[in-house]
Image 1 (cartoon, helix red, strand yellow):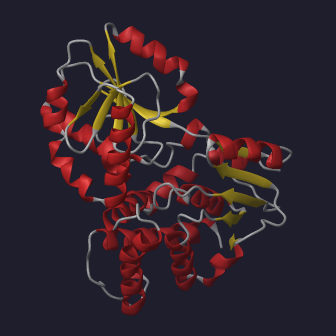
Image 2 (cartoon, rainbow, N blue to C red; image 1 turned 45 degrees about the horizontal axis):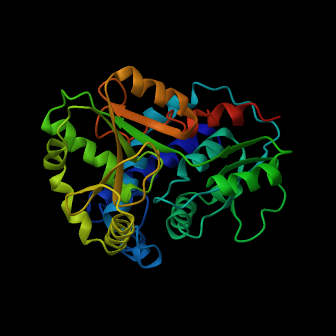
Length: 349
């Protein structure tokens, strides 16, 4: 397949994902799938929650919508035209995917596929069905996709380079096992929000999206909040109250209840609005159902902390950073950990 054919195929996939995310009925054969294939894909959005309780239909729709925004001919062409791929001898690029949120490894596949190399994919046990469905329907639309994608259930076999995403513990293993190959290895990261006190209620409500989307499980989810010393947290609680139905999700509620019990037993000071616990803590990572916060006297203090911990932070949300509500809407060039995946692939020899 030449690059332009791949872009047109991916654009078709983008139309399918967008249509499914919007809950639209089968629009006709022009979408690239038959009615039964389209409805089968639609039904999968309900089924995956039985395999992974965090993958609600709403979470899957959000992931579909985000990926669909990438997959237009204009966006893909503009992206790849920033690089010069002259692949005479395609490499086998192993992709070790995470599974914390739906289709979190899709961007790595997309990068390898468009670069002209072959993706050797090890799926996370937490996110097998959606990725397999993506490849299945791409193959239906163009059987040549099989030449560029290989899913490995157990051993990776032969490979020339590696893109691996995991926890800090697994990253240590990845470094040892894959270190002799060209590689990108990603560790734990999380995101932070900085409030200066001038935010409107609407902006603080948008911040709720950065906190609660995907139940707070993504590296782009805000897990720590920096606020001025005189900021009234009741303003924050009032603004995010519309997100209170999240407590009806069983796995989230279990985490909320467990953390509340543990910290209260340890006599920790907690603020509680019935669906989110706030704890004053410099630790960047907070568990599901909890948000850490830090009060600052001078914004320079916040900037100093953020700079010191930049290797642990994925994004920063705030008036001088990424706009509130946008942390879970990365563009094609918003590379995880700030490492340009396409440049890495471009330089493979």
